[in-house]
Image (tube, rainbow, N blue to C red):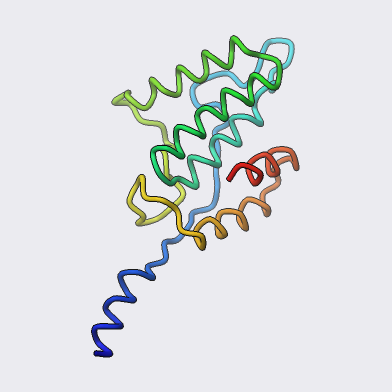
Length: 143
């Protein structure tokens, strides 16, 4: 009986390791306009945090929509649509980014929901970054 309980716990209590967060900002796209070269960089950072944290395909779709919404909020609706469409097309591309969905977890299968303890690990890691309070708070408010 003890062996069976140990075996069951080993399957249900598996903890995955979370890599340190890295970003390339707006992967393969500019981060702003000529007049404001970092206009939507924060939106890309927030989006990269979601991709690092991972989760379900539905969570990825929400992250992609949030990127579009964020760029719109910065005052660049036409760029928001271009960026959003580029991200969606990127999911279909055979050339993959260095930062795919769920890239933060070592050993965790893609598209699985995050457990509450995994979400807490992500939250704890995000608050230790040196990104702006706005980026951190926007992520935490929606995560």
